Every structure is written in structure tokens, then in C-alpha cells.
Length: 323
DNA sequence: AACCACCACAACCGCACGCAT
DNA sequence: AATGCGTGCGGTTGTGGTGGT
Image (cartoon, rainbow, N blue to C red):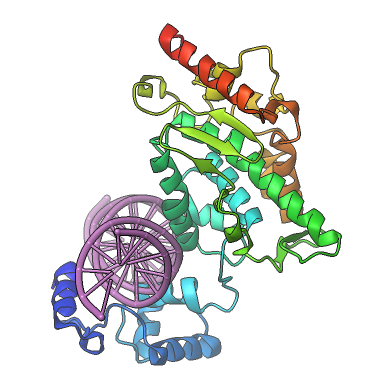
């Protein structure tokens, strides 16, 4: 029987206890406590692998694939649960900019996180922001927004949290860099909920396509009417693609970490390019070092007057068609 | 209280690949 | 070389929870 049809029938029956495939006698849908116990118990004594036979031997009326997924994404003892931390968000953004939707590869650098979890994070959080900005999530302008706004803002917040934790106030986040493990301890993921102006990525946005972050602002051109410059979606063409930041502020302003942009892959030698050989602390610090700092003058566009100027500049550019 | 929309996450699916036969 | 099986990956869907009206 077709899987989807089977699921639909079972859904209509409204009874998960009877949620089995008629022909194969296989269960679908949410796992019960008893099933979890059976699977965990079996694996703890006999190990993983050969999932189809494992499912049969463990007395589970599930496919091998289903057992494998349940184990890897949920039951495995080293699975980290809870909110994605700031540090993890930063890593996800950076690694995704390099590898795209290679979720399992990205997950390798976030211990305890599964590819499924990262994928869900990307789809529910990051893509939501792209939608709010009316950007295509794969467009260069959205990638630039991530690189020039979100990531610096995340760094700022990580550093702020780290500083506050060392001054004796309630610890929000702490990256331990003295071991080979990338450890994140005692982060209260909900702490920022009190600040209604900053979302989980530290950004606010409005329907006009303006993104603000921290004390600085920059205009991100809305997708409408500007999609024609959306070129070079693949890594390595960044210097030939539209750069909303440079376009707005003009050539007189040097980006603080120009080399970060000069590398064709968007990465520096010895940075993520050599990531395979790096331990997590080094990887994380390299990412931090490559991101333009919010304390740099480039980002100090704090006053309303400056922001108004930026808007005017963008409008001029739009009118002149100089994109 | 009831309804609806949205969100986060768990689970499923199809496909591709590697390996054994 | 062809086939079947197991596994892993990325995309998609279903479900429960939550907040707004």
C-alpha cells in the first residue's frame, strides 16, 4: 500500500494505536514509550546497524529506516536538546554559507545536534526572515544580509553574554575553548525574549525591507524590482555579485575585514578552508575573527539622520539604475 | 470558549550511493 | 555486469502547542 495513502487512512481512523500498515503490519507515526524502550534497550545491548533486521529482532513493527531515524534524532544519548544557542546559530550560518543545504555535514560541527534539527532551524527561523525581507533565501542579497548583519550581530551578542558572565551576573552563554570539544554551557535560550526589539537572530525588520540590528542599520534592497541583479548564487562569485552594503555606502568606506570578502569562497586561508583539521574552538574563533565587528565604524550608523541618509542613497541608486 | 493561523519539531518519503552476491 | 539490500541524505508533510481574535 502506498505510504501516504496508508497514513491518510490511519489519520482518518484517528487512532494511532492502530496506526499500522495493513499489508506489511508496520506501524507509522509517533513513537510510543514502549517502542522507545524496546529500541533503546536493544541497541544498548547489541549495538546499532542492520536496521531492518534490528527492527525485527527487537520486536518492533517499524521499518528499519524509522528505527534508525528515531535512534539518531531522538533516542541517542548524546543528542543535545533545547534551543539552538547563539554560538550554534553562528556556526550554522557560516557553514551553510559554505556548504548550502548539506545538513549532515553541518551537523558534524555541532556536537549533539542532528541534521534534522539544523534543517528545521533553517527552515523555520532563517527562511522566515528571508520571507519577511521579501528575499529569496538563496539570493545574494539575503546571503549578504546574513554575512554583514546577522553574523556580526550574533558575535556582538555572544561577546556581550560572555562578558556579562565573567562579571558575575547571571550567565547567559559561555563558550569553553580549552578543550577539544566545542562546549556551550548554561545558556538561557529564552533570555532574550524580554527584549521585544530583538528577535532570536538579534534583528528587527519591517515590510519596507529595512533591517536593523543593534545600534546600526543598513538598507537591504527589497526583492521587488531588484531581482535582476540576483546573480552568483553559488559560492565563489561574491565579488561579481551585487553587494547591497557597498552599493549603499559607496567606495569611500572600507569594510573592516576586507579579506573576508576577498577570498573567492568567502573564507580565508587557514580559516574555514582548513576546517577539517581544526578543533571546534579554533573553528569558532576563526569565524569570529572573520566577521566585521559591530564596534567598527562601518556599523556605526546609529542616528536617525544617518539612517535617513542611507535611505536617500538607496533611493538615488534605484533611480539611477546603477545597480 | 471557540476558532484560526502560525510555529516548531518529529517523522516520513523518494532518491542516490555503496557494497555484497 | 546486474541485481538487491542497507544506509544516508535532503525535501516534505503531519501533528501538537501556542497565541491572537
